[in-house]
Image (cartoon, rainbow, N blue to C red; front, side):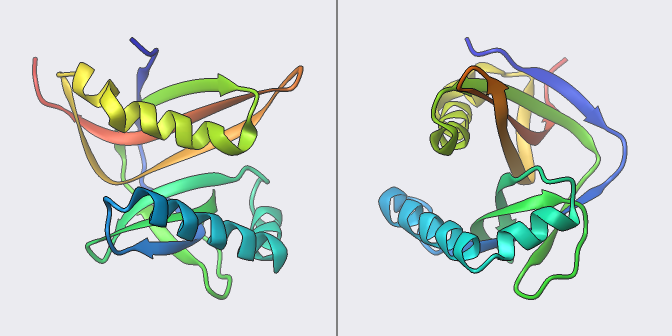
Length: 159
């Protein structure tokens, strides 16, 4: 079983991000292409760098339920006013924290996400994912390796 921990966040917080609405949640290839195109666009036009400069420089991949639709984007911790960006509310509470490591920085966030939703949540019967979103960061760990964590809000359902 993958390592995980439960961390309590005592106050609501915000994240600011650029992203895309995913019309069909089960269209994995199409959603990956839309997400990659958005990442390329905000990298090339400098919007992601501008957002990172306003915050602490740590980029997050964010999955969120926005207006009842699945949404995926890239952003930072904090609330910033930047054209085209959305501000997302993350609520206080218990968060499932799932770490991961690997040599491919660009794939690590997706690998952790796949691990969590591909089976790890089912292995933790005491907690249920309640959203409305989750965020994953990846940073250099040294020696060509990268470290990442996914944080998603959960509620205790047993015990």
